[in-house]
Image 1: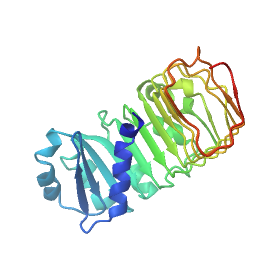
Image 2 (image 1 turned 90 degrees about the vertical axis):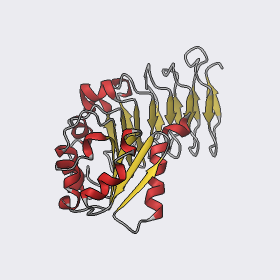
Image 3 (image 1 turned 135 degrees about the horizontal axis):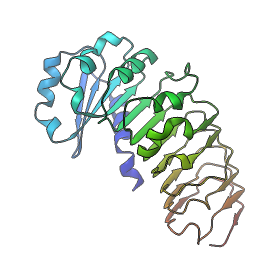
Length: 269
């Protein structure tokens, strides 16, 4: 269930941890072809690598440690690679590079954006509005170790993203509060682990199935208004109050609550 949803993110971290001797690296799975670029490469190199695979698998393009826009300009402006890309990833890239690629690449078929360890949104007055303005029909948005405002409002993503997003991951983004989850009408997975959220109350969503709140500062949580929720992780918190109801939460199958000092449960199971 949840493990499969993290597949792409885990591969990103695997690519990051190994290091590379060349400027590109390729990982293949049954459904995905992940190409990581970390500097200048010849366009012919990329074409040869992908000539057979990219028609069989969903193509994921990952940029790592790139600070100069010119380093891989051809990949989004001149090359034949980008029209097939379904997901874009950025690991420790400069804000100017990420901004240039995202704004230059006009392609509706990109369904996922992953940004890891970058401060490119730090100077943006409203980070979620910036993302909402991108010309992608996003289904997946993952930001890891990207500083966001203390309190974020998902309404700021705009109507188009509210319709398309099904998976949102804001891990380790220094968030203390989140509003308007119900604005994302088709959201199924919400990951908010390793933040600074003290309470998760008055939250409603008719579509949410999986919710990760581990490693926050939670002392209370109320999930009674999440009727389709099947998986919940509140581990590594200090919960003192937790609310759910069998009638309101009929789909709940898995509940992770490790490493906490949970005292009492409100509502009838």
